[in-house]
Length: 269
Image (cartoon, rainbow, N blue to C red):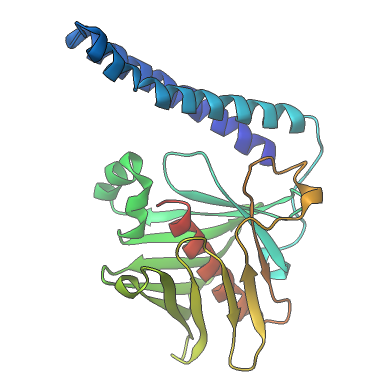
C-alpha cells in the first residue's frame, strides 16, 4: 500500500498538471499577451507547473525505491497498536492512510456517507470536510469496519462515535471559535462522562493528552519521526502518533477516532 500511495500521487500529479496546462494554454489563446509586461505576468503561472513537476518527480523516485521492497500488510488491528503513522492519500475525496512505522499498512479513515451536494465542494476543495456533515469509518486492511465517526456542527463541532455493530460509544466536542491558537475539545464516553481534555497547537498540531489520573493517552510532536524508518517514508515530514497500550478496546476506538478526525482536519486545511 505504501508503494501504491506514492504511485497514486504521481498519477494525480500528471492529471492536475495536464488540466492546468490546458487551462493556461486556453487562457493564452483567448487573451494573448501583447507585451513583455503581460508575458511576465503570465509566466507566474509557471510556478504551479514547477510545483506539480517536483511532486511528480519526488513521487516517482519514492515509488522506484520501494517498488521491489516486500512490506506486506499489518497483522495487527489498529486497536492493538501503540503507535500509528498517518498519511494523506492522493485521492479526489479525503482519505487518511494508517501504517505501522515499519511501513505495514493497517487501514484507512475514509468517507462512509456524504450528501450528494457535498461531493462538488469536496472535489473542488477538500478543506470543506471541516465544515460539512459527513460520516467517516476506519476500514482495516482486510476490509473490516472497525468503528465509525459522524461529524456535524458549525460553531461547535460534535463528533459521535460508533463501534462496528453501530453501538454508540462516545463523543468529542470541539469549540471551533475558541480553537484559533490552541485546539480545545473534550472527549466523553457513552454515558456522557468526560474522559479526556483534548488540547493541542493549531499551528504545529503538537499534543500530549493526559487524563485526570496522570496517564498519558497519546503524544504527537510535529517533525519527530524515527530516522531508521525514513528509508520507507520518503516525505520530508511524517506524522507518527504514540498511543497508550493500557486502554480498553472501547477507549482505544475513541482515542483513534479523535486522532483520525483531527488529522483529517489537519491534512485538509
